[in-house]
Structures are given as C-alpha cells and as structure tokens.
Amino acid sequence: MDLNYWSQADMAHAILSAWLTPESIASATKVGAQRHLIFTSTSLAFYSIAGYGPYSPPKTALRSLSDTLTQEVLLYTPSTVKIHTIFPGGIQTPGFENESLTKPAITKILEADDPIQSPEVVAQKSVKGLENGEYLVVVNFLAQAMRGCAWGGSKRNNWVTDTAMTWATSIAWMFIGRDLDGKVVKYGNEHGHPSGYAKAS
Image 1 (cartoon, one colour):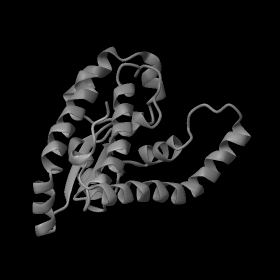
Image 2 (cartoon, rainbow, N blue to C red):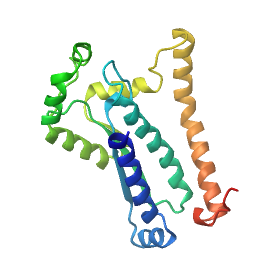
Image 3 (tube, rainbow, N blue to C red):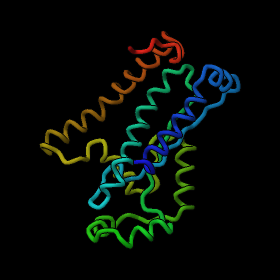
C-alpha cells in the first residue's frame, strides 16, 4: 500500500493543495493553463488474476481515487485540473524479470497472453493517449478489452440479468454521470471555493 497507493495519493494531495488555491486557479485561468495530474496503475486494476493479491488491490484503489478526484476537482470553478490514469500491462524491465523468478506457476499460465512491451513503447502509447485527452489510458489491446470488461467484468450472480444490467447501465451512465458531475459544478458555483465551506463538527 505504501509503494503502490500512498506514494501517489500523498503526492496528489500535495500537488492539488498547491494547484487548487484561489490564487493558483486565478493564475492558471488568466493564462488559459490546464493542469494534468497523472496516476500510474496497472491493467490488473480492471481484472486481476491469481498471484497478484498484494499488488492489484492498491492499484485498483488508485483507479477509485482517480474517479473520486475527477469529480472533486469540479468543485473548484473554473476547473483548471484534469485527472488521468495510465494502465500498462507487463513492461520489459529488470524489475519484471526479477519478479518472474518467484512468480507462481499459475500466474505465468494466466498471463501468458499478456503482451510484454518495452518501456519506450509504453511511454509513447501513454503520451499519445494523454495527448488525445483520454481519462483511463491503456497501451495495448488486451488492456483495452480488460478496461471494457471492468465496467462489469467481475463474477456475476446471474450471467443473463447481470450482463443485461451492465449493457443498460453503460447507456444510462452517459446521462447519469453527466447529471452527477453537473450537480458538483453547480454546487461549486453556488458555494465558491471549498476552502470557504463550513467545517463538519
């Protein structure tokens, strides 16, 4: 948790505390600046497999943090911050090679089709996704499929009804998500900068 979650969560807190002051927002707005906070997670945050019990949960928590902050920054109007998260798969690094020495056999079987990419390819595809304005950035087709599955890829209680609900909510969420974000923006406009909110007792 310290390495894979808190390191990024604490950094995000420090950065956003600086970026979202009234003075910083005014300065960014004056020059038309858009700031981008970028997390790095893993495609296992969409669908984990056996052997990654210590690794996947904190990386999945990053995805949830990213979702939360994406909406919270809307309170700071005008919003000058965008949140993004990158979800690479296997990267050919010394760390990956070292990890493979002690990896359970079943894990190697399950991830046999995971395309191992060079750091340069992952970086190039990540930058391209960010330049395209993507929110959840993936760098290969398998991760793209896992991202699609994550909207409803966990084991289902009933494959027919739960899958139908996934399809229906995927369509409905185009409207629900916009409505919820709109309420946050409206609240921010009505109540001003969050630093002026009454403290909960």
